[in-house]
Image (cartoon, rainbow, N blue to C red; front, side, top):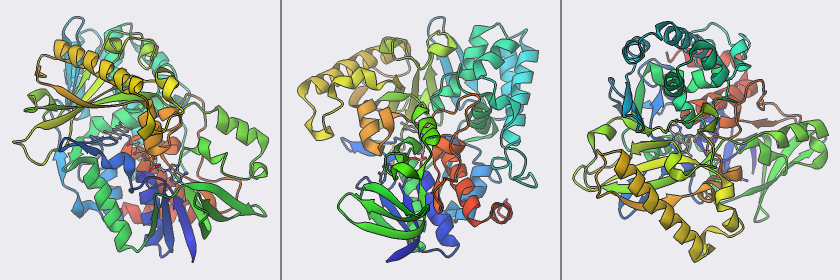
Length: 495
Ligand SMILES: Cc1cc2nc3c(=O)[nH]c(=O)nc-3n(C[C@H](O)[C@H](O)[C@H](O)COP(=O)(O)OP(=O)(O)OC[C@H]3O[C@@H](n4cnc5c(N)ncnc54)[C@H](O)[C@@H]3O)c2cc1C
């Protein structure tokens, strides 16, 4: 069977790409290494409790906002039930050193007012910061669909300015700078390296509106997969693409690890672009391109603790909690620090039965170097020392969290600890990175086009991390294939 397109990887960007191409009448196949589609989104169960992995909440999902519009275009909106986050406090940022906390409300006006109250004397810095975030967010044609054309250059001057230098130019108040940059945890690039533009894309979407989805990441995965099936996309799951073959500079087929071949006229790869280099012929890319790709840095990895509590504390009901140590901005991603000195993101997981035990996850930055000793062992064959390491870490985290977040009960029971090895093995992410390649100041991340005709790339490493970034990258890539302006005009009809 020869397809029009084969899509490699069934994360959000791969699924969305397959849906768009199929909606346009193409015969599409999707190949996923994991045994199930959308492994990052789907989450997992421990002791009968469901835990979300790759999706907890998102911005820009209210009616008429950009993510809502993309989902309408894809035809999945009726299968998703939005959960509106607490509009007065979607994220609590808490600094245990002096008990300072800031409750982020939704909406620019409300955020401005809250920040003014909390940081008297910093009004002009706050106003300037919010103005630039809003302006940057709205200057991207893929985030602001009301813009007439997508020809407005993709990079602004804020692409070259780091969040840290931008904030230090605005204020000498380190607590304010920490508060404004804390959402960097959602894109995994430290404020000294990340551009103002990528920060604005992620934080700016949350400043518009904040939602979860009933049923969590699994419900989103299921809605996408249902649409995929309606459109007749062929699925090859549990199959690892080992080779991308081209002939005379044009893509011809992919080879799967068991010797299977999937032939197609075109290919969209949604895997980490650095991995692509080892899958194509040596001569397919210029040495300079290979060097450029191999030099891309990966975003941070993490430790993720999945825990059960008898009842969800109010601080986690339709809101998340950030436990913030006092650190230099550049130090936030550092894994040199004891785990007790790292920032933690704490979120509740979608649970069907409110009367049963509830699940929550606690996520902090981590690095492959911390689990280096076990990196060559396959998941089911890791030695007892690895399990003991995870148990010790879990015990410390339990003591740390219950000591510093009194609302979380002592009955907190940590059921599982995912490490950078887990993230690496779960989704074939180099070094276990959570958000693909870093989006650094001045760096041009891969574009959808490659030198091999018919081979395109997509995924969070291109346009930006998170569900929104992955969806945008799929539309960006499909725009290159189907005609950007036409696709854009069709999406705009769903506004
Ligand atoms: C712990 C965690 C929490 C998160 N929380 C949020 C959140 O609350 N909100 C939010 O918006 N975002 C969140 N994210 C980020 C979001 O999940 C990602 O940005 C998004 O899922 C990336 O989608 P993607 O399609 O680019 O990549 P991926 O989902 O990584 O998709 C790539 C796919 O390719 C497959 N693959 C790799 N190699 C091969 C191969 N050789 N052959 C075949 N298949 C292959 C992988 O198995 C994978 O399924 C979170 C991420 C993590 C890890």
